[in-house]
Image (cartoon, rainbow, N blue to C red; front, side, top):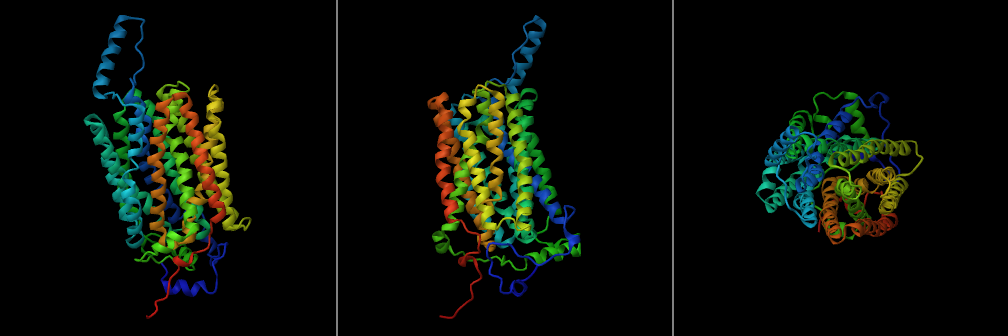
Length: 491
């Protein structure tokens, strides 16, 4: 890893601008067969395990508040008696709870309560001391807590909310810390694809739970969902501790060519962490506020779609748990593939100088928000057709992939050296949406189930349009003055 002196010497008189400029690397260092891409895929599976645990409650909640077993056949008395015995055994092992829609919304949002406590502090700590142990510890703790979710639900709603909040703290550590890894590992012209590969694991985790969760609820019972993905997370945490290093300089198996390529690509970037934070300047920064407002607005709609898609399909379209889980998984599966392709497209447009960085950030954010809101607003009017509804859900949720390389990563352009704390700050705003959106949505549905869904999607549109306009007006990609290395002066 280059030192600050090397970075300043390599940077020369380059002003930063809106275009990415890097030292030409050896051609042999490019490609997917590299340690940095291996790191991306390992982080991909950590995000898979993390989000699988987060989404598990979304698919199991309908089974937890309703009888999840299919009706018994009425053809013979023997078959009916055997079925009843099976149902009694299952219900004894997997209890059903009398929770109102409002309480369900609070439970779904409780996971995000704890993230408020962890997001900014963990991002700051990761920026100073490194992200490896924060990510590994957060994943391991979250996975262990996942085993205790059924016990907490059986004990009482209050304990379940507390447990999910603590799980949110541990997962907040993972989300806030992981972008710090790419400050030392991601060449600027590969940053979008590496981040997309690693972040897309979250979609795969949610997709897998929604795909398999309905089947598990109807066969092994809803408790099995928490046990299976808790064990998966423990395995991923062990791999993470064994294989990950903070930077290329300390990795024992990286080739000299790849190490030199990464070091020279990052030499111009002042990413040396700082213990002090220019809090007053950050508060006054409109480009930074444009990012945070955009993230809050986009995640409001994302949490509505992600959290309530199984319930929407089950209550409005009257699908059973297995079918609603499968169709919800189809939405996330399409988003998973699309997010990787969008990241590769963004890097291609930048490397070939088809778009400047500022145009790419604004254009992709505008496309993502406009399409997501446009398709979701019309969902209540196409509920008579399952195929049209699914097409609109897929198009609405996949559109968020454009924001992944738009406003979601823009803070890395403004202040590379404060990536950890700014990721934590963006996580704070996204989790604020995660708390408010499910709670408000649950309240709207409890008032009137038919008009409630329409009001949910309209409210998302009302929230997102101002956020998009503010981002288009004030977003920037130049390193801000408050994020530069300030020379010391004597008073």
